[in-house]
Image 1: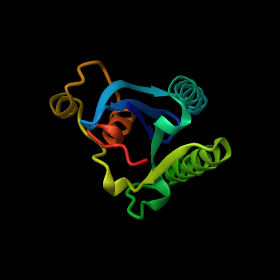
Image 2 (image 1 turned 90 degrees about the vertical axis):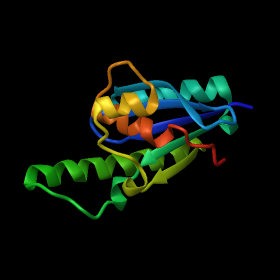
Image 3 (image 1 turned 90 degrees about the horizontal axis):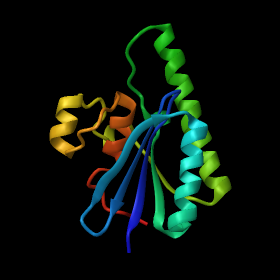
Length: 144
């Protein structure tokens, strides 16, 4: 049975990626950047199509990050991303979804576009948020 893995990189520009694990690890099927509400809508569509038991969200949890660089503006942005991680966790619980909150250190973040293309084979245009979401689910085996 196919398992659908959804990668979420929280933030104003929500990174959103879909990978399908058909027993060989998650193969990317979609990599993009959306608003938080658009991403939540797509999650609901995937649940309707594949069933809750076959879908799991892998959400980068900025609340677990303890290292930061930059000034006051950067700190405000970090606070916003942490709040978004909490929103995602609350929403998943309210909806009864399968999800894992992933420590940022456990993900290959900030992958440059050329390296991402070589590593994943994904040739379409991406931004940093979309790539971060994709790396949460690329070649990952479903754990639910």
